[in-house]
Amino acid sequence: MAMYDNANTVTTSFDLQYVSEYLIQAQWAEMIELKKVISTLAEKKKAPISIFDIGIGNARVPKHLSGIKDIWELIEKYDGTDNAQACIDLSNKLIADMGIGDKVNVYLFDAAKLYEWERKYDLILCTWFTPGNFYPDDFSFETYNPKEKRLQLDDNPKFQTVFSNAYRLLQPGGEIVLGACYIDHDSTRLKQEESYRKMNMTVITDELDSFTATKEGFWSQRFTTEKLLRYLSFAGEENIIITPLDTYGYAMQVRVKAR
Ligand SMILES: C[S@@+](CC[C@H](N)C(=O)[O-])C[C@H]1O[C@@H](n2cnc3c(N)ncnc32)[C@H](O)[C@@H]1O
Image (cartoon, rainbow, N blue to C red):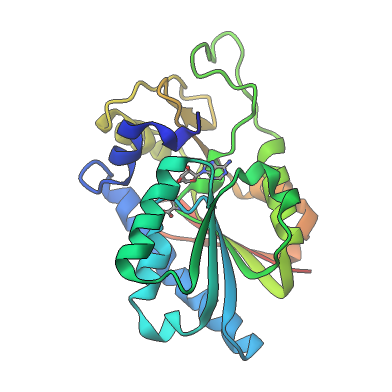
């Protein structure tokens, strides 16, 4: 079952009453940066742009973008994928309620299979910490015990597969935006753990892990700049721009420009 297919966790993780202040702050900070990227790309193209949203969740991003007329006019089409049917259902409901089905379409699809995707886009998004959700297929939420065998993430083949395949889907001049990624600080880890506990989950990772996971099947990686540059080396360091989203070392946005 996909991480967000559990009826309980899908509700609590999108419900702002359970979501920490830091997570809410990151949503708005990444949205401000994202609007700048959309304007820049549309200006460069001299036409509205196409967007592909990996891990669209409850369609939060198109919901907010569609409310800003000047920005929405710069978007020609918006496709989203998610591997959780519960999220596809939430997105489809929102799209119908907001009447934005002329531009927005969602597909049940695992990002690990992006090598099968054929359409190309000006902008590929992966927002609100979704880039940290790509965990190894053999990770066991039932038995993980870091004291016995710690998962080292010097490489993360799943992350690298998802984004190298996404990179292949960029139109010339396009870019990938990793909306918000956790910065690997101990203070971030403590904030993540607190927010999972607030959602009544049991944390199974410790202070030496570079990701936080819960027994209930949530998995979220923190990144250093060095690690991100290594994972994204297929794009070339000169094409990667990293912007902090706050003053307390919690989240950063990563732009990866087409070669
Ligand atoms: C933290 S939520 C973010 C949702 C949305 N991007 C936002 O900004 O509000 C992560 C989303 O990514 C989806 N996801 C996780 N792994 C995925 C995968 N392998 N393929 C597609 N979607 C995935 C989850 O189901 C969930 O909807």
